[in-house]
Each structure stands twice: as structure tokens, then as C-alpha cells.
Amino acid sequence: MKDAYDVIVVGAGPAGSVAARFAAEGGASVLLIEKRQEIGDPIRCAEGVGTYELDRYLDYEDRWVAAPIKGATIYVPNGTPIKMRANDENQIYGYILERKIFDRALAERAAKAGADVYTKTMATGLIMKDGRVAGVKVKRFGVEKEISANIVIGADGVESKVGRWAGINTTLKPSDIETGVQYLMTGIDIDPDNVEFFMGNQFAPGGYVWIFPKGPGRANVGIGLLGSKIKDGGRPIDYLNKFVEERFPNGKIIEMDYGGVPVSGGIDKIYGPGIMLVGDAGQLSDPITGGGIKHGLWSGEMAGTIAADAVKAGDFTEKFLKKYQKNWESKCGKIMSRDLILKNYYIDMTDEEANNLVESLKDVDFTGVLDVGHLVKILSKVDKKLLLKLGVN
Ligand code: FAD
Image (cartoon, rainbow, N blue to C red; front, top):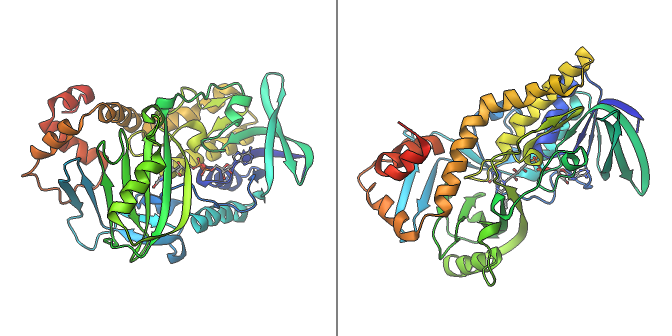
């Protein structure tokens, strides 16, 4: 392992691998470190992702797709479904991934671009010099080492320490984090190209249960609950077990995953002198869906590209790196703000309100409605309170 790089990326999830790749493609010398021995394993994800812009990051390969998705059904508390399908029955609008393979494929792209990749290598602190980040302290096979860098990209996920070490406030309140538990189940009766969501207090107070198919008879079945909604006797796993026993009494559980998702809408400042935070480390996952793969890819690309530009310009100041936050906000700022409003609206909604809302939509055709933005437009037409909060017209 060398003693110095232009850029060090901490964490080889989707955000980190993409950041490393774009920094290396831009001509920087790059080190990507990952504390686990295997990239992508264990997963902490339901593995759902939209197809939009995915081909910017990987050429399609069957090996990282578990199931193509053509529709979604949302069940409100009284069991009424909202069914959303594409206009064209052949249109695929999302995938359930095999993240163990997907994450590794992204890291391979970073390596192909010239980044050095080290697994089983944990960042234990940052090197600070003249008030800016100047490298990373790492531990590998019990040996500690200091590696200098002009830029460090924190891609260390929801448990991120890099931001805090750099002096960025990354505190998460219980209402800013969703706790997820999931089983990979087999031998279950599901629609193999349709995802399902279950809302309501009996399923998941302030959250939802999901069924994400991974091929015939096989699916990720999980639950996400807001930290602030978890009370004694109401652990996510208790709700999930109840759901699974009722819906899939004969199904078998072959894997269990769990983890947290930041749903704060993003930390105020995702950069500093010599530092940028990407993906979950910057709390950039979507506040209403909890989806963070796409936002990790996008923020990783932005930070990696700007890191390479900074190296070319020899400018690692806060002023230069501010462009990263600007780019992020111009692509995702509005969506993040809208979805934060939606999250806060949803967690305060009673079962009765949700049932009534859907009752008033009973004549609406949801064919072709495949994203949150489209759904919100329809909902806010019948829900004036939501309309006011969002300022949608
Ligand atoms: P991560 O994928 O978490 O990667 C961070 C990496 O950093 C990890 O590999 C970690 O080992 C490494 N690391 C941490 N600390 C250090 C250190 N000190 N030194 C070196 N390495 C370190 N998102 C979706 O889009 N769709 C979904 O269906 C979905 N479902 C989810 C279900 C659950 C139950 C959970 C918990 C999350 C889900 N998410 C989903 C969110 C998604 O998994 C994350 O947003 C996404 O993985 C974030 O990518 P990332 O690269 O920022 O971080």
C-alpha cells in the first residue's frame, strides 16, 4: 500500500466505488478502502432500484439482476390496493438487484479505471493539517498506517464516522433514521415482477412492509420503521414476524439482513476543506422511500468528478469543493425537500385518513404512474392538506 494518493475514498458501497471510479477516470491517483473482507456482503438493502440512468454506472448484466420489475401495489390499512403498472406491459421500470454482485461490479469498474482497492482495511481516523483533511489513518491486518491525500471522500454509509472526524455535524435524531429488518424468503406465493408495500398501524406504524421479488417463489420481505416510532414491544422484527406468519406461513427464511437508513433529507453541509461526503454518509437517501442506491451513485459521480477537477486545479479548499453541494442540490434538492415533507405528512397520518384518501381515488386509473412525483401529483389533487404543504399546482 502506497503512502500517498490524490484521493482516498472510505467505504466501497455504491457511492464509494462510483466516486473512486470517476476520480480515477479524471486522472487522480485513488485509493478505495473497505473495512469488510468482501465488498457487498452482508447486504443491508431490499435491493430495489429504478432503471433510470443506471446504465451510466454499469452495462446491463443478468448476473446482478435478480428480477426485472414492471409494477407496484400499495395496500392501505383497510387492504385496498393502489395498483401501478406501466402503460406498456413489457416496460421494465426497475430491478431487484443482487447487491452482492452489483456492489462488487461497481468496485471492479473503479479498479479498471485505475483505483487501488483494499478490502479488510478500516479507516480509524483522519490526518488533519493546517485545518484541513490531509489523509486517512487505516488499520489493516492489525497494522496501523497513515496515508496522506489531498482529498478524502467519506462513503462509509449510515454508520459514517468520516464526517464527524472532519468536524461535520452528522448527528441523526431517532426521527431521522429508519430501522429496517428483512428476510430473504423462498417457497412463497408472489407475483414475480410486481413489488408490494403494506401501510398502516397493524403492519408498520410510521413505516411500511415490503415484498420485493427475487425470482419466482423468492423475495426480500422486510419492514422499515422510524426510530422515533419504535416503542416497547413494537420492535420491527416483531411486526415482520407477524406479517410473515400470516402471509407466508409455509415460506422458509434463508437469510436475514438489517440496518439503518437515514431519512433526514441530507445533512446541511456535505463538504469541507479536503473532504466530501457521499451516499448514506451524507444522509442523501430519499426520506420517503429510504432508497439510497441511486442517490449514492449520483453523489459518488459528482464528488469523484469534482475531486479529479480539484487535483487538476491543485485547489482543495472548501470554496472549490462547494461545487459538489451545488451540483447535488441542483439535481436532487427539490426532490429531497418534497420527499421530506411527504415523510413528515405520512408519519402523522392516521389509518382512517389513509383509507379515506384512497377511497377518494377509487376511480383513478394508475396505469403509467410509476414514480413518487407522479403519485404525489394525483394524491395532492384530492388531498388539499397535502397540496398546501407541498405547494404543488
Ligand atoms: P453503504 O452501501 O452502506 O456502503 C458503505 C460502506 O462503507 C460499507 O461497505 C461499509 O462496510 C464501509 N465502511 C464503513 N465504515 C468504514 C470504515 N471506517 N473504513 C472502511 N470502510 C468502512 N436503497 C435502495 O435504493 N433500495 C432499496 O430497496 C433499499 N432497501 C433498504 C433496506 C434496508 C433494510 C436498508 C437498511 C437499506 C435499504 N436501502 C435501499 C438503502 C441502501 O442500502 C443504502 O442507501 C445504500 O447502500 C447506500 O450506499 P452507500 O455506498 O452510501 O453506503
